[in-house]
Length: 44
Image (cartoon, rainbow, N blue to C red):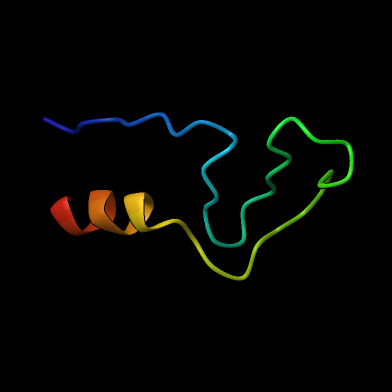
């Protein structure tokens, strides 16, 4: 059974648009991702 995880907008994911509730970061696509995301992906 596939599991789904929802990651809040203030936790960045590589190459995914992230605003974190900030107008200054509107359309920002970071070149890296958060450690929490790396750990979730490693767990499958």
